[in-house]
Amino acid sequence: MRLTKILVPCDLKEASFVALHHAAHIATLAGAEIALLHLEFSDRALEASKQELDAWAVRLSDTFKGQITTHVRKGGIVGEIPAFAKEYGCGLIVMPTHGMKGMQKLTGSLALRVVSESHIPFIIVQDRDIRPQGYKKLVIPVDYRHQLLEEATALVQLAKLFGGEVHLVIKRVNAELMDESVLSGIKKHFSDNQIAVQIHEVAHTHHFTKELVRYAASIEADLICAINFSYEYLYTLFPRTEEEDLIYNDPQIPVLLITPHNQDEVIYNIPMRF
Image (cartoon, rainbow, N blue to C red; front, side, top):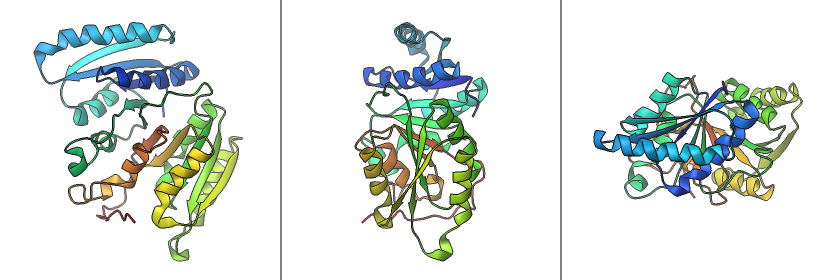
């Protein structure tokens, strides 16, 4: 994760400005540039939107003293946000969300569709502002899949940036499904970088995401970090995925999602809800 440029997609709704606070906190510690991006469907709206986005940059400069650039383009968010981030060399995207509304309840989260189109890490922010200490407590679910180890560098980098501690939440499954090397490997990644690790085990695996969020709230976690496996789900039939349950968690804890570079052969799973 190259934290030299951080992208914040802006819909220019006042509630979305909180995402800029998160980005500013990260960028200040990392010495990164913040790129603000707004998308329009009409050429006629580009000039007015650029003026409004520039005004947001001025507001942000009151608290963030680093470089801020503004960009307005024509296009849809699902394709254009990942494309711009790659083109501009962004290493992290901080994106606001206002919940699943309207047709998204049938077709799946728009925010998650954007995340799934890119391998750049996303931090999804609801209405909760970043705390003064930043992301000090990170909660990471461990499901014994190798992608967690392959994307561990970004998690270590973020934990080191904030001098944070990591809470690994594991679920016990059948012995034949458990790859203990994943748990020991991820623990080693953090311990090798002098990052404190705690383990919490969830017994009720059918309610794993709910238990994960409940635990994160109980320790006042600042960020939940997870690998995005939503590409394995049949969206049109079973739109509510575990990733969506994380993104729209009730305590409004920000969520870091990483879509893995190395994806298993796609198997269409049915997300089980009890």
